[in-house]
Length: 480
RNA sequence: CGGGGUGUAGCGCAGCUGGUAGCGCGCUUCGUUCGGGACGAAGAGGUCGUGAGUUCGAGUCUCGCCACCCCGACCA
Image (cartoon, rainbow, N blue to C red; front, side, top):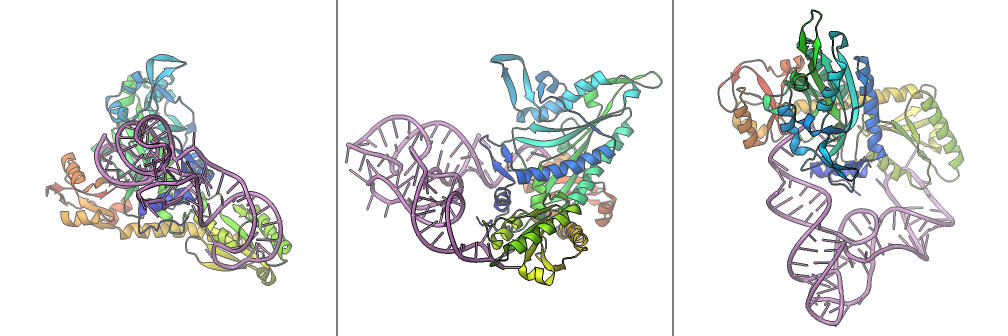
């Protein structure tokens, strides 16, 4: 019943929260999880916020098939090489062996580009800006609830453009959308940057990402945006006619975030009492716990339900737990475990003094608030403050755990506890060696101006490993 | 795929040198409680993962199989 303390076993602590807060459960299928209502509610909030941001930036939703013919998968060489080992493949249908195997999509570039070929003839058909909310399957060897499961939910944007510049703009626009979402909604500071050659998406020309730090100092790749160049257009022979009559291959991007973000949320903010949810992603932002003593039941419950109406009318996600099956103490612990940002206690004593007790999930602080018309505003301010505080806290933690290192010994020590900022000679060999020796990888080559300034990334220096000249520092860390 | 571990009530576990299964939590009913995981009383719930074998007798011993979890390598 008790959570494993975060400090004694971080992994177990994470799993305990997922299971005990009823976010997800193991299923009877290896590597696949059941997302429970508490977890799915978070996903729905994420979807709503992201979907609105996608629409604002001109995208529309569509849906493509779950199954992809094997021949499609094989059309882009790097792509099939990257994904084939982790694909589930359907060999039979309707009791018959299929003439062509069907891959359960690990990602949809191929099925989408085979379709785009039909839809795109002229520059007038461009850009094509489509997003899909879907499930995908990757037969991972080792799975962890939310962070890596054989089947997961995500969104994948697939866009087609007339010029490389336009595609590039789209890639940057969408990674910026992800950054904003992570910071504004998840209260999660992220580093925006570019992946190295060896870390980029199979089939991409360039991959941009947002990298977040978890409370054990490890990195979690939280979103990616790929510049696919003309790779998929060439693989699927997707050309368009330009204004001056030339035939050219279409430029492509794809970008995605997944239910992994829920894992990021848990690992970034939670504590030994359980989940801590940022108010913007909490369906239940405030829980009212009535305190009933002696014959005050009717009085207190009436007041509680009145408060519920008042707060609800002001757009606050309120939930009244008026069940008499559990004691207040039990309810306090339970809603803290579930991450509800605010708890409002109301008893006969409070009603007498025309006040209530409000407890913050992030700090544990208890505040007395008058029961008047200003209550909804006061609650909203508290919610906004929690949202801000979670971000500030996570950012302070990241700053504390991010250090520039000058020697390889310092480097090795630093990646055991956080992010290491270090010079790199730009070669894949060095990257591979470092990974082999320390398990740390280059999380990204930051592109975020403020981050570059903060750590003076653009100074020249010598590679931490090879000692060869380096033009820029990059971010190294162990990653999930 | 390597290493480790676990399968006994819904969950967490105990069950010794073999003798036909128990504890805590949860669940049901009733009552008393309620400002930090309440208390009492009475109940319900188990082909001991699976298949062989040894034995008069197997949760327990032997061998096989299966499943899942954790740690690594691969990956979002």
